[in-house]
Length: 387
Image (cartoon, rainbow, N blue to C red; front, top):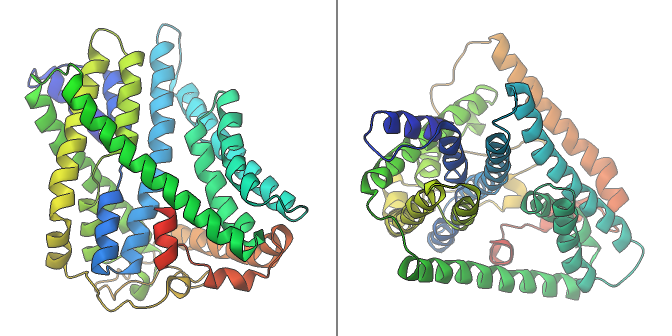
């Protein structure tokens, strides 16, 4: 919203290429998808705090899901602009895309966990179930990428523990391999595209202002959300300002933004899609080079490299204790009603953790829930497998 509105107002002022309002919101949605592959690899190399690693990784994954859902929603709004479609229907279409895709993914994930309790086809089924989730969502007119994301989350938590030790090692290595191939291919494709496609490189002002606006929008997102989260947490569990700054700086754009921009070429006529595609390609290249190249310096300047958190992540993300961060000074003493609501929400997440530990994990897995504490996706092996 912030990026789209700023781009629209700047276009109305004739400072940059002018796009219609809905097209600006589509651009704002697709350019909000972050891709921290480069940043996370540097995090691993420098031994950055595990809490910061998890924040950047998790925020990026959920950002992708929201960006896809918002882009599809704005695309539907644009295609039905001739009809009288109010704000309520826009919200309904967004929830239909996001919640529907998430439900399809979670459902397939739980189904796979039950089937792996019954039979031993293991590796082949483990690879095929995410693809089935993708095809199911696409057949229903939902987002296959959002669906497969939540299928992966559920399968990692429940289905993965039902595999034998050899199958677990094979599946981890296999997904590591195909993820590396996919990342390599997308950057090769972007390189070929820059060299071979005809881009509207005359929109330098659009590119410059867009980079400025996404920085402003990301700051509005990161610092405001962190503030709300910290209101409901005791001082020793707050997200520190150093981590907030690192999270803001880590928002480089990559494969997801590029893919959605490529789709916009087909969705938007009159050259608007081609302009968005050119601007997005330039932003992806510049953020990868500038942010990726300066991440090490940024981490050292913020003093978050090896800052004393040598705790295994399984302990750092305890179901009852939640996030462990460095002590954050200046906790607000106001016990207002909004803070109480946030605290109640946090208690509800702890209740879900108990539900998962006592009922869901024993039902969907063949191993006890205690094994999950030692099965950490952010350990040295896990990081390589699920990046």
